[in-house]
Image (cartoon, rainbow, N blue to C red; front, side, top):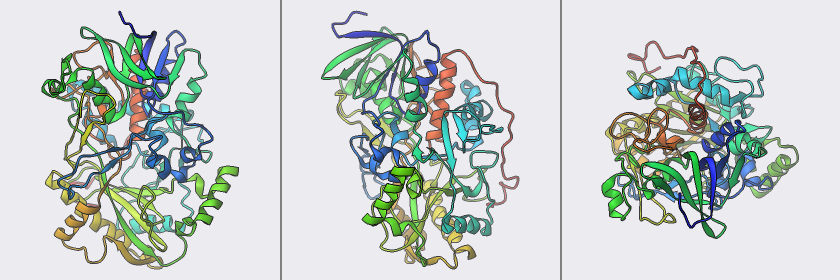
Length: 559
C-alpha cells in the first residue's frame, strides 16, 4: 500500500474502544502472535476523575463534552419538534464509561427473532447465552450457573434495595399481579424485582476496566487516544487500512488481516459512509466516491424512549435528603475513602419488565425504579421527597436514519430517529402511564404515596396523555440497528459481522443488531463483542440448553 502518510502495520485495527471494541481488543490479543491497534477518539478514563468512576455521579460524564460526543437529534415532528439529547461515549470504554450502568441482557426471544433470518441461525439465544456467561461474573459468584459465568471480566452487582421504597415497588408490583423475579438476566425476565449494575467493589465497571486496561499490559496491543478515524482505505474491494488524525497530524494504520469498526450506532455508519460504503445516491450528494452501494447503512435506526411517572413521598426517606451540597459532599467523601455508601450505587436497584396487553408474547415495557424524583441527567429534582418509575416501550416500530451532514469527518452526522412515527408506539406509551399508575396505587405505597407530580392528576384521557408524552418523553440513550446484520437487501453485515461486498472489514457493535433488544444495550453489546471475537478467531462455544420462561397464558392474559 503506497502512502505518503506515516504508516504502521497491524494484524487488526479496531476503531473504537467501547462496549464491543474493548472486548475485541482483549480477546484478540490473547493470541500473542497478532498485533492489534485500537483507535479511540476520546481521552483516557483517568482513575483520578471521580466523575467517571463513582456510580452515583453518572449524570456528570453523560453531560460532559470531554467524554461525550454530545449528539442531538433533528427536530422530532411527533414530539413537538423537540431536539433530543443523544449522548455517546468518547473515552476509553466508550458509552460503558458514561452510561447508567444498568446490566440487562434482554429477552431470549429477542435473539431468537434475530435468528429467524436464515443467515443468522447462530445468533439465537442458545448461541448467545454462552457469550453472556463468558463475559459475566455476578456478585463475585465464582461458581456461576446456567445463566451466569463465574470468572468473566465483566463484574456486575445486584441492587441491595435497602431503601424501603425499593421494597415497596417490588411489593406493589406483586400486588398488581406481576411475578417477582430475582434475576432479570436469568430464567425469567418478566416481572418486578432487583436489577444488576456494572459496578464492582463500589466502582463503575466499564469495559475499559474489565477488558481494555488489563489487555494493555500485553506487548501486542497498542491503544491511541484522541485519535479520530477519518476514512477507511481500500485496495479495490478490500479494506487495507484507516487514516486517522492524531497528535496534530494524519497517520495511516495498515491492516494485514482485518479492520473492525466498533464506533457505535452513530459513528459506525458515519465512518462507513465517509469511506464510500452506503447508499450510493447519498454518498454522491457529498461527492464521496462509491466503493460499495449498501442502502442499509444508516437505515433501521432504533432506540428506546422513556417517561418519568413521579410521586411525592410522604416520608423523608428518598434521595432528596442528600441532593443538597452538604449531602453530596458526605456521599462523595464516603465513596472516595471507602467505595461504599450511596455513592457506590447507580440507584437503579429495582425495576421490572411487563407486557402491555394480552397477545404480547414477552415483555414490551421496562421499568427502572428510582427512590427520587428527578431527570436522568440529574436536573429537575423535585422540591421535596419523591420517587419515580422510568418507564417505556421496548420494541418501538418507529425507524430512523443516520446521514452525513458533509464529507468532513469533523462534522456531526444527522441523527433522525423519527420517534413515535408508528401508531402502536402511542398505544404502548399510554399503557406505560396507566399501568405504572396502577402499580403506584397498590397498598404497598399507602404509607409512602403523596400526590402525583408527573404527569399529574389533570392528565387522564388518551389525548391528554399523548400531549404530555409529546412534550416530556426522552431518549433512554439506546441508539442501535443502523448497520444491521442479516441476509436481506438492507443488511450491512452478514452473520460473521463481515460487511457485505467488502473483504477485510467488519462492524462489531450495537449497530449490527437487526432489531433492538428488550432492555439496556450495554450487556448485549458486550456479548456481541465476545461472540464476534470467537468468530474472527475461528472458534465458538457450544450452544446452551438453558430454558427460559414465557407466560403460558400470554395469548389471553396481560399478567
